[in-house]
Length: 555
Image (tube, rainbow, N blue to C red; front, top):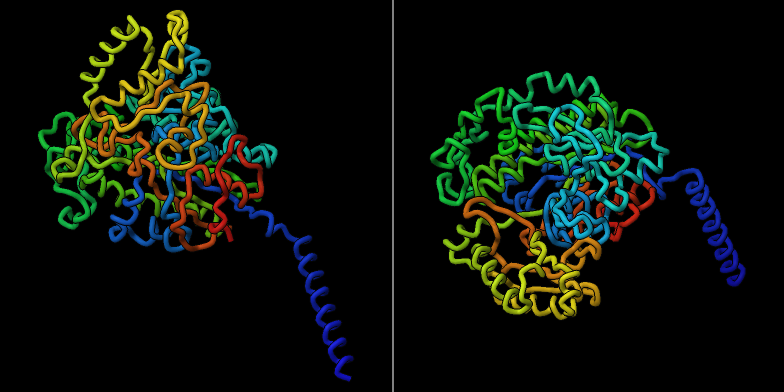
């Protein structure tokens, strides 16, 4: 009797399990929830020059509807890093959207020396196209120097080009590169004495009526105004003193203090570029993005669209005033309000819970070295003139000519291979000799050769970061790393570009449809963003992607 009971119980369990499995199979066959989600809109936000600690440092000043909404309702990757150098705007935006490093996507700097053309090139310039919206050459741009696809490209390919991709930034490179090769439109702000949003004939032959109307609306002129703190400056305890020697000046100012109200800021018809160096540049960007959202009907049907946004004023302000300035603090408090406006517009026009969003940065920034020195922290500035003079003497003495060196840019030395060959010298030997010489120069921490990049596989530390930034066809023969805390820049303001952690550690927040609320302290890297979005959408990875999907982010 006991035997039959056990057999009956076993068979019953087996039948129940089989029935449950069949139900689950039926659910899988009738739903694609396990394969992908279909937000009506994906929004990518890049905040130019945003260090991770800006998120935590200014957190108590933020409202509940901007950064806090993303942190508290989305997913926060607290240990997110760029895994390559140089850390600058062009490579940064490209890496976010391609899921690749400069070693693959080819954008090795904002500008670089092109070995094939024997001239300097700009990451987005393309004189085969004409400007649209201006008579200047500011619109002669395209993504042609980016050698792989972006997540925005892959989404359009997946939906047979029926979805829209719109990319917007104050900076041309911040719009052109995220939009990929297939964007319906990329718009950027042309200041000078025009103050207009423009584009390139790569995308269209004339501006849409809504862009023309926006340019005529007086919005840009309305932001030509005095800049004072949005809150009581006495409450800005998270930044340094307002009047100090570490900050730059607007033309016409005698001290770097609030309020900033120079003639150039107040003039309504001239010098619109000055808006970029105030938080009002981000506000103008937000106005234009919201208008694009509405006028282009983004997220209005079941075919997923993509809106790529870059907030650039944070970079201009950081370069002028530095990481520890009250100007930077005020800029982020104001950006928080602009983000809240944008999120409210997304909720209204697309629907809360109907879109997926990520926010990150294109690089971090260093504290002003002169400030660090005053605090007894090792820091300083490279003496380029002295190093150049010493290198010139070395080249003449060792090789009989200075012409062996063709270019120095992005902390890379480019050698003339023809001259080396004609002198019957070995290229690897010359690289090694020059690297050893350069290692002894002021402010230099370490030096690597192209031969080392070719023949080794680095997996951690500075050499790993350099190798990810090393493009075999485009990069130089010798790679130079400055000592931590040292830069090649003015004595005021902050900059970036190094493989050091202050330039690599940036925020990464995910929010919305398909995103699981939470956080992680495990390391994530910038090229992980595009594969994560690709997995979420169930589409192909960008063609050069070497990042890994961040699985803990996904529901």
